[in-house]
Length: 420
Image 1 (spheres, rainbow, N blue to C red):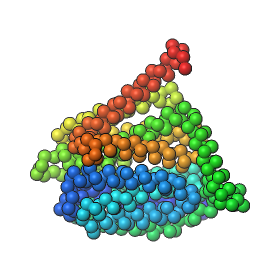
Image 2: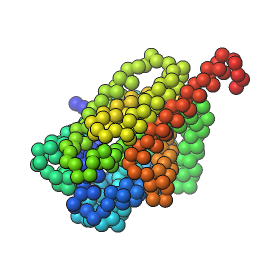
Image 3: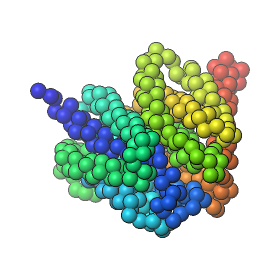
Image 4: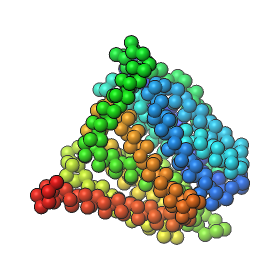
């Protein structure tokens, strides 16, 4: 007989797998600028995509505050409902205004993932955290890989066009939403609904919860080591998500106007998912490496390589060079972010995983919003895709140089050439 914690983990994995079956996403840019909608490339790049980023950041604040209070499950259900609204509007609306509205719901769809990732920690005992984390992570990656392959095959063999792929995505999101109602409810949570706070009134319960949050916050970020890795987590996540968001417009720009091309976006996303998964596994076995001594070297080298890849991608006229650069860039991100996450987790309380990683993700979105406002939006420089990726490349190069400087300073302090 399966253990209760394993049953719950499998239930959550089914939801995670279904919500990632989105074969339309690797081709979403081609769909948006295609014959099915009345929008231009500039409108998609400078208005639609930024609206999604701004909505995601804004709604994450709300979701972050109410996830524990509402005991997770309602927000997981709302995640599914938001997805249904998004892909329904993609299928049956056409105007720019409609796209801007649906981006608000897409921001909610993304923000509510906080509830999905933290639900399991409130439902199972701490001794099973590592197992359930690996299960849910594997389910998501499997969904993404299968989704990319499915989308690629349907496009390559002319079984469906870019618009019709959204029907599969919508069907999978509906299935995920229906499944979410079957998830067992949470009776107690980490902050607002603890067993020992059942007799407290609402005001005392809120005060107790915020006191715990403040304690976890102070414990994590007063540690310079945790703070350093958290900042890098936020900055590099910002860079990766921004690259991932605007990669399709760059691939479109690499092709000359009117030139016919075979599009392998789905296959490339699947390859990246699989290699990223293998990279994360490899990072997980490097348990004997002392990252306190070698961390800055790793972060610097990876950031410099990523910066170089993005600069190459911004200048190349060969689509496959950009494809390869993107895969290597993403593989490096998944490898390093696994190490970074592990180093942070080692330093913080187990009960504060959701809080600390949620705050780090929010900071990443703040950085991404600033980057979008400056580089992409009409109120900023409104750079074309090639110009954007040149900036993203320099962004990673500067990040690498910063950590080289940090490493040099720490070595000099260790050798007592300079004082703390």
